[in-house]
Amino acid sequence: MLKASQTRGFYLIYLMTKATTQLLQNEPTEQNNNTDNFDQVTPWQASLAKRIPPLPLLIPLLALLTICAAFVNDAFSPALQSMVHDFNTTIENMQKVISYNLIGMGIGTLIFGPFIDRYGRKTALIFCSLAGIIVNFTMIHAPNYHSLIVIRICQGIIFGGLSSTPEVMIKDIFSPRKFVIHNAWLITLFLFGPALSPLIGGYIFVWAGWHWIFYSVCIFLALGIIFILFYIPETLDPSKVQAFRPKQIAQNFKQILTTKPAVLLIIISTTLTVAVFGFPTLLPAIYLVDYHVAPDKFGYFTFSLVLLQIVGIQLNKFIMKRGLSPLKVWLAATSVQAIFTLANFVVAAKFLSVPSIIIVLGLNMLLNGFQIANMTILYLMNFPSFTGTAVSLLTFIRLVVPGLIIGWVSMLPRHMGATLLLLNAGLILICTCLAWVYYLCFSSKHISHKSN
Image (cartoon, rainbow, N blue to C red; front, side):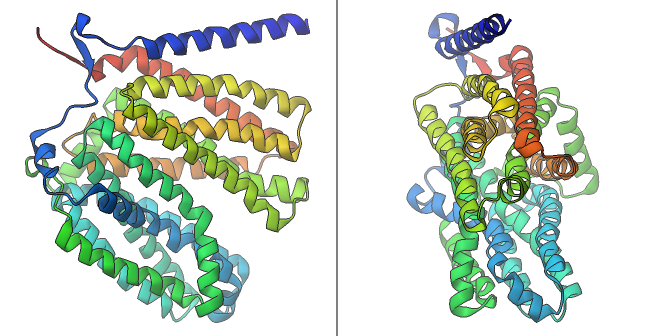
């Protein structure tokens, strides 16, 4: 019986491997007059290419603006006990201000999406940077804990807009393929943000106090405003300016939610995000409580998972430069990821331990890097006229829905990590099935037809 089961398993692996290999090899050719439309450049993008600063300056600045949101939320965690004393509250209450900031970010991304489609990306960056300086100064001088809650929500709203705008600018400037390549750096540095922010914030706190964590952000934002004013052009195509009226905004949201391929991509992306959110939320209790891992060693495990996602993102960038289709790379990655879930089931059944759990989660996380940006560009290609609104809705859903699901899952029995591994496996298998549905139903949208 076991040998028969193993045979079926290996046969399944063979079929999926063969399917994904043929998928990548079956590139469109001139013979059938079809070509992937991931390299098309609009006249506006061609004109922007002459006015933007050199990429070694542009991409790092936009990336640093993106990770500001992570920094203001995570950098002060080493100073929580000091802030408990300063605001005369409890450590439990002070921990809540982190979640209040995330609530604000969800609201901010939803608000600023339509804003940047009307008033422009450059305007939004300058406005959010100025507002960020003001709200940080206000937080530094907050009179009490209740004021701090309100300030943190406002801070999340502002930095939600600031962190989501650079991605839209990259989409404005580059073709879909180059968006995937250059956006990889934004995602990479954004993932580094939560991992490095407590370390940097801890040093600032030790040497200068928690107030200077937020003063340092103010200084960076002030320098960023100067650079944006003089060196970065407005990237919003004037022909695609949207009205900033409730009726128009509602119509744009309705168009997104009634576009079948976009809705399917939102569902897939959100489902995958639940798996991404799962390990930082559920793993601490598993390792620290169930396996008694030392707190000072736990960070190395989570950082290794973040690092594997970054490796995947950078490998995906390299593959995009080779000219492969983002659609097919995404489909191949999710199919291989589904094969790797065999390890989830095997380890959850018989081999649970600290090393085995982190190895399996690593296999799960590595291939996420081949999916995030590719799914995003497939989604955004549906809405060239209101990219900001489209990004805001996608980000809002990916923040709120996974948070609610993980909050519910965290109440379930952990079973020494088996629950987390089986949750990830189930989510990945759902994503793979839905990805194939997308490919079979909507792949023709990404093929342009050339005339002889």
